[in-house]
Image 1: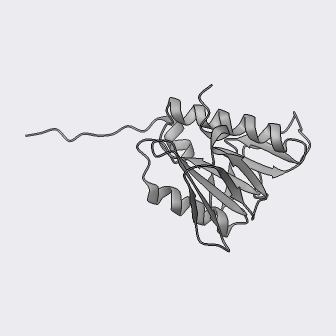
Image 2: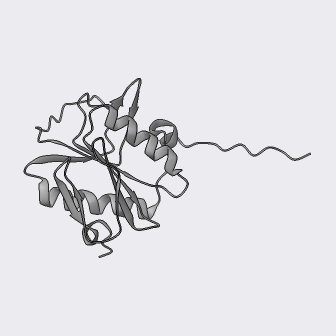
Image 3: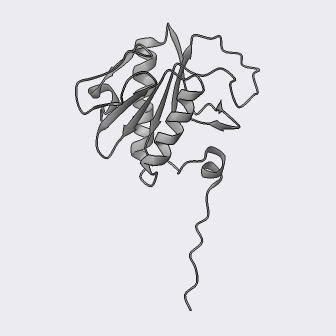
Length: 160
């Protein structure tokens, strides 16, 4: 008789509701934060891994862009009540696309203007908004009229 395989989820996976990221995921996340802060840091607050409410639960996107806000070093709440302008999800190797799309829809339904989904293995970026059909970029400049944010593929997928 075979013993059933029981998959144990890490604290990270339990807390965030998504698989543990790998090196490529972290590399792209760093690229995004550096590029977004360089280009938009005076106008927006660019952060990573902040929880936001989506109905009766929270979501923790990989990168978030909020209207410019002061940093309060004494702030201890793990989640922010206001939605970001833009939420960016980077697909982890074992993360089903359907799960990411469901999360994107929930965030859009709770005030996020746009969600970007970055697929490292396919080197593409999908931009999802409430008012337009999803657009997938495979080169050039990723543009997003809903948030007013744009980045080049060279910035997102930079290796140096």
